[in-house]
Length: 542
Ligand code: TEU
Ligand code: CA
Image (cartoon, rainbow, N blue to C red; front, side, top):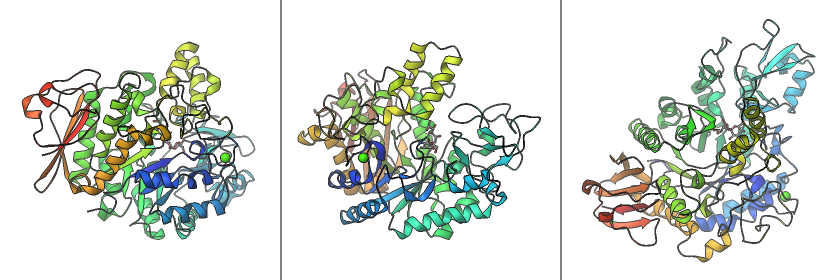
């Protein structure tokens, strides 16, 4: 039994959620102003993406001061008001701890640049090898993972942007400094933490070229990662708090260790393999249609194997780094409402804690941008150049961005149907999605059969029905395109079937559920003898 099995987490990308002061940028008071909506939706936790002091090269994931607020988003007092107001509504806040790296504007890095050797030990500075970078590792945002500093004649490691320098966790002073950050926010009443790419913190002791890849196999789930996490959690007293680690290119075995209760590391983990089924040869920048058999296999493996070893998944299809699932795995044109609901059901009745990313609850589709100027994300801008340099035409590169850019998930929240969407009183920092008819909180709160209403019901059902929160899971032997699973708690069974294709799919007699129909993505109850309609998702209590 876990105390967050009934919970639902709502993720807020602060820059795009709600703008309270009319500068076109979402902010902390903007979130406070929407707490009644979030309480109505029924969510228990808000994960708020970083709003700390930052030059914003990676929208706040480049932190220059972990204990101060970026004035663009508000003040410390605004954060305290948000915490207090959330608490009144029974909502807890999770803050986003970006501990793999800091901004190069962080005081620690600035001291390192000024030749303070103690602070050089906070980062991973290395001498050039034969006049070039120490290894051939690649940054996840494109280009070398090493940046040369002429004044020091040294390179520093950055697995992300060159303004995001990787911290040296081997140095106990780094670990102590980061524990102080946790203590600071815990004392302010924060209810949990999300740890950014936390499985990349432990680098290998030998630095060598990766002849098979970009270097990730050397530092992913690195040698001391479990030890460092245990230490951080124990020394800050957060073992029983709501914590989630973002695990990049991880394995089930490691995620079991990260989340098994007796290990006392984290409450749950995000993994991303299921969101790479439309990457050709594992490359995000090469398009292919989603491999649905692979999706089914991955859900089955992660859900069943994590369960078998007492691990716990954070279940999700969307976040601020991903294109919108409704455009990716659904049909946002012909079956917008049905596919939005089906994808929600697929995730919400699984074993684990479901996450809702702002806007998915109203079926927000991809941005639909057609020119480079519309994009803001550092990764998109870098890869646009890389795509052109590898021979893609401008049209091809823009098409790839329109499918893969992280900005697809970062468009401002649509609160109303009006031109500025109720987001701001001025034009926002990033454009609204091109297709937005019917996509708004105000419109959908009026309707009984809206995507929004459906999410609200799913969130409530997890609290009402122990089989959803506590039941065991077993995947059904379904044909390609249908994902089905059964949850069981004592005598009660819950059967979920989701059609992820645009075709009607017949169901073999043994797959036809018999019992009480609970919820489905179409207005009319399914007739299972006729099969599943396009993008139909439905659940029965059997
Ligand atoms: O993301 C880590 C990360 O690897 C993703 O950006 C990845 O590129 C994406 O999931 C593609 O599959 C985290 C944050 O969520 C992201 O916003 C930051 O840019 C990144 O770390 C660096 O802090
Ligand atoms: Ca603002």
